[in-house]
Image (cartoon, rainbow, N blue to C red; front, side, top):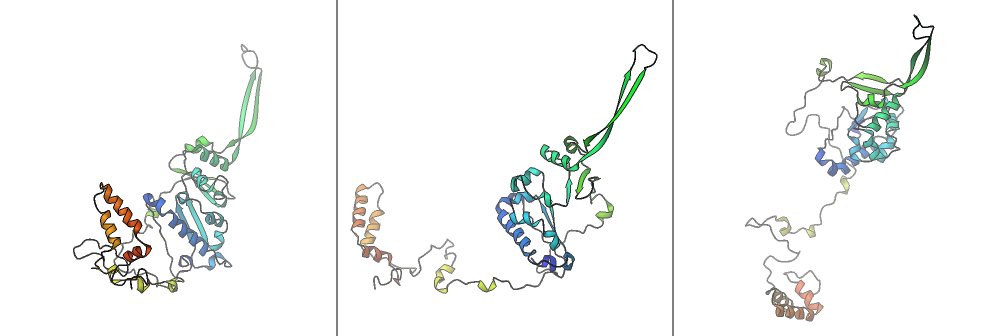
Length: 323
């Protein structure tokens, strides 16, 4: 994670999640973003430019990840660590659904870009953010006899009134080629969208998609030790048996799981417990057989039951029994 801002070369990290897997991978993405935010804000340098690289977090459809408490509070001080966030949402309703009505997401955004919206609440919020302008209105009043060759009195009055720069209806009717840019401390800007794929000055600067090659990449960073490598534990050798390592039998079918210590060709001993099991395997509709099985099972002593469970070549399921 530290290589994002302190690496020898600039690094781009892409986390692309298909829409069908958002709900399933949401906890993992939330954990990654939370770890990045906490790891890169541990040490405050004298100047954000003292770090090798500046970091831009571009989160498309970020309300779909749910509420990120640390991310909401860290937006206020991430700029001091050389980190900026580019958040994209469809409407304010998505943000309020994830972070509540009184959230600090928009309060910590220095630049806000808005397009034509279909939501009335979002349009009204944008209209209020644009502010008002002073509009001058003139009124003329005519006085005199209607049959006179000219009117005796003409009165003109002018007054200044406040009007919204854009009403909510005008915000919803913005053309597809225009956008609104709101910057803290500056007047709002009504700009024309610049599509990079339509402008030759930008289309020439777009790099082609990289071609993935087999094997290791040339710019792959050197592997480093981690803090958790020394805590790796191997399974206990006493719990690993040869039969557990075999996946299938010779005939291709799945191998039945056996208890540890039970031989492959162990021949069960015929006893009271075996007779009870054999009786229970008789016809289900035979009421007399069921009654005999219950009587024999109740007549078994705990030692007999334990002896029946302790079959095998080693007899180590219940130590000390059957030896």
